[in-house]
Image 1 (tube, rainbow, N blue to C red):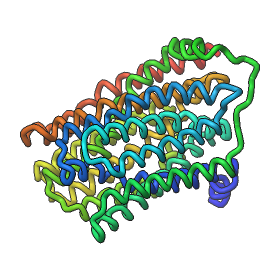
Image 2 (image 1 turned 135 degrees about the vertical axis):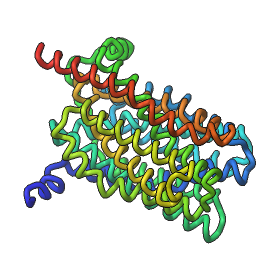
Image 3 (image 1 turned 180 degrees about the vertical axis):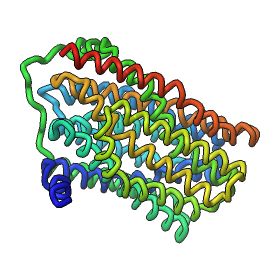
Image 4 (image 1 turned 60 degrees about the vertical axis):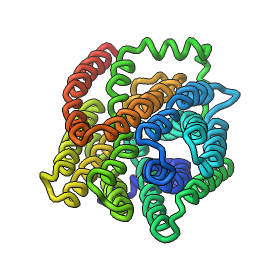
Length: 410
């Protein structure tokens, strides 16, 4: 046990710990807004759930561009990882300048377009830095560590956001604090993160590098199922808070406590799950995640139908969905790094991140639409989500067989 603890603390590059600390600070700001923005813009600003879903989804439109620029930039010797991260933090801070005063659909869309661009630049860069600074099985644990930092920051932000709403009833202050957190994150990157790009002498023209990646059958199959995973995560952030508020009738304080529980539980379990799933292949780890998503969505449906005591059902559902997310995030990133040639690592991770853009483009509008319909459709939405894991399981089994064939060829 002593060796395992030492590995967690000392086996990872110091810069991974610094990046994790910066991400924790940034995610505190995100926690202020992630779960409360849909409630605020529907119930106080007066927009429809469909409008808010479309506005949140619009971030994915600009996110596609951001991920293309980010993936290209991190693999380019004149730009690299660090400049891309700095730009991402700056653009995200500017997005909050638009979101803080937003009182109509147009401003909400503008703020989300800017935020999507910043997030699009951010993910390929931050994931590539972690991949650069880790190897082998350690890589799964490195990704788990930074995801743990994300979760702790997000949980802290959710709890503080709930406290702010309960005491001073000021939702707009949350966007201001989110912007400040991005500025702090920019400072951490500027001071403490070194450039990790290395020229391997195999640099292709960027357009060709993207086309080469898109010819990788294993990557394309993985991306198809990964879009579904990210649609699932989008439901936790954009659909579940509004569903539990308007259909299960929980107060903002209860919503705050529930999602704080979701994030704290995910944080407590993240490292242990990542280490245990190292015993499985990456596709098998993702299959475990799918089964947990199916269970969590089923319990959410049962909660809405009052087949369970509603508070207990919500706690169980969000707990299972926390485990599903824990199983998914490190394994997904590590799988993509396993597939990627080193000179194209940024582009492969950018394509992985594009799946998040697509999932968040599709997920919130579908969830918002379902909540605007009759209760039967709103409740049944969760059951449909549970059933959708079946084709995904089959796709991952096929991917595993392809990866096994590739290993035998090598």
